[in-house]
Image (cartoon, rainbow, N blue to C red; front, side, top):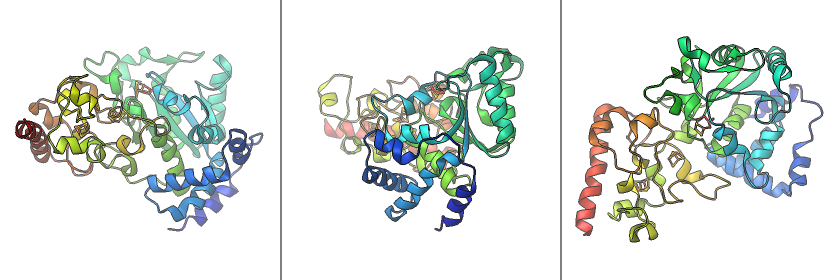
Length: 370
Ligand code: FSX
Ligand code: SF4
Ligand code: F3S
């Protein structure tokens, strides 16, 4: 794969002035060039490229300040931004986020009120057709859109999001809420909250998770910087490089699942031994995401590592479909969720069978074990 034309194209884009160089930002925060290349090599692996692409990735990251990014907040808890920014010391991921040409992000910008509104309008005008749009949160739409008004002129969130989508070069729905509606859209959905993809005709790349990991957020920006095109997507418009495999397939507790060793209740002997969490509600067998491989908070830990089952937060309508969160799924629900080995091959028959097979395995293997 040859990225030289893309890198040359990026070099020709205008660079945001008054930005410190990435290398000086890294140095100031105690990262060496070697750390940066190691990071680039890990990013290459994450995006499915060999480690020989590390210098190309490093170059692409250095050019990431050429692409303007607009980040909007709709109905949400800001956990997605926090996932990326809230660490005890700046990480390379968060420094890259600082370094990109972030034209608008309500949580971290200094402007407010009328000035914030005009900043957004100016950014959309100046970079029309060229900016990356990242939207966090579901959109209360139609009749109910008065539930979300934003800014000094109290504009409807739905209108702002639509307008921003119209002029964007690429659109990312960040988090479960923006991708699938999230908790706002859970029954009875009083605000008529919708996924971003329902309010625009343009292609939306979903980056679900409640929240998604910092790696999946930065990885998607980087993928676009590097390729300039949309990534390969699964049936739910999730990038395959991040969401192709099940949590269950790479889970560190999988050996215990196969051996029929289950935590029966939180705090028991099995929990102390790190047994499988299926019987206390883990939805890892039905959930597609890369947490078991990449984890959160600079690779320190993830939900299952911390002792709670996966709640399926990167699946559509998980608040309605995956509960109760601390009990195994009831088989009649398998029809509405995905449970094949890869997120692309989803078929109801297979789902039902796979779901039943998983439940049956849990029962049979623990009987054998006892
Ligand atoms: Fe939703 Fe993001 Fe869950 Fe929160 O804002 S994905 S509620 S973690 O943060 O949108
Ligand atoms: Fe891991 Fe959950 Fe699968 Fe058990 S059921 S192996 S805890 S993903
Ligand atoms: Fe979400 Fe499950 Fe990962 S709950 S964060 S998809 S382990």
